[in-house]
Amino acid sequence: MEPTLELVSSAIDSAWVMVAAILVIMMQIGFALLEAGSTRMKNAGHIAGKTVLTFGICSIAFWSFGFGLTFGDGNSLIGLTGFFFDGSAEQAASSFSNFSEATVPITILFLFQLAFAAVSLAIAWGGFAERAKLSVYFIFSVLFTVLIYPVVGHWVWGGGWLAELGMQDFAGSTVVHLQGAIVALVATILLKPRIGKYNRDGSSNLIPGHNQVYSVLGVLFLWIGWFGFNGGSTLGASDGFFGYVAVTTNLATAAGAIAALGISWLIMGKADIPSMLNGVLSALVAITASCAFVDPWAAVVIGAVSGVVTFFTSVWFDRMGIDDPIYAFSVHGVAGIWGTLSTGLFATPALAEKVGVGGAGLFYGGGFHQLGIQALGLAGSITYVFAVSFVVLSAMKAIMGLRVTREEEVVGLDVSEHGIYGYPELLQPERVQSAANTKNSAPHPLT
Image (cartoon, rainbow, N blue to C red; front, side, top):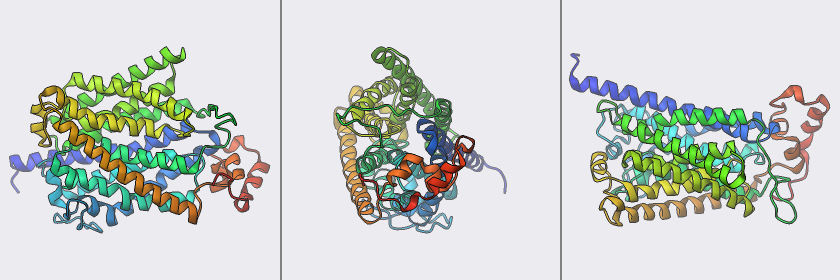
């Protein structure tokens, strides 16, 4: 076959989206390091290991039903084709016209979207950390990938009713991050706080993570992977627009890091590293919706605001008795809401036209129209995800229980769920034997 401009362009686009998919999948490394580093040593192996497990479960569930429900041709509410994806171009291909006209093979698009679903699921697990049964991860991974994630995904990206209205969510502040964050919030409410987190008077005790270096490395992995997350959502490289998306992404992230560290220093009297890391992640979440729609100066504003807001909301949720071990809802939920609304404020007419979704924001002459669509999309998405996740997790709690026993939680999930400590040289043999006998203990009183 003679090489033509069209074939070369398609090859470049396909190679870039494949690289982007790999970068997004590599973000699982970041989540593993961040979660393990931000929690206690006795649970480190469990938290890192379940990342591999849940990515595997999500892959099978998304292949069998999730992809078709999200991107299959159907109606304004759900997709009805493309189940048990076989790689054929006919399966769910038409719905990708909502993204771009890039000629990328659907197999690569499938892997790219699978990586997104897995990220959303990884975010959800933040609300389960250090107290959920391993069996919960098996069951809820499937239910999330089939019942929860695809519905909002189809509404916004698969040709559903929010896509028809022109909701702007370029790479998933709502579809990916807010969905995962809402599930995390529901989970942490139903599971209740970790043992020792709150005193009888309601005051909170700090439960620091065991390895701040792991947390920093995890955030750096996520920062790098996000260039695939946002830049890859152009579904092409031949026109160079992915470079612009990468610039706005990086500017917002840098602003979030600086703003969060600065506000923690001002309020706490010390430059708090975990707050800075949350600022990085919240800025990444916020710019995810708007990275293709806003000018660079607006990206800086979006990132800085998210860093400050996340700091204050994480403190407020802790004082309200919500034990969110890695601040999943503050980082991914609150920032996801702000990021989704920000396009209704800062989207430029030229970029909205280039992307082909929605219109200009309030500050660029668009009035309240786009902002109203963004708010409506948020309201619908939050309502659906909260309701379904609450029903599903409540049913699981009633049938099988969500939380490990008190003794298992005290000993740590490494030993009680897997029979070996993540740092075995620090655990005495007699404790291993004691922990091995905890499976028949009485249920945790909070469950």
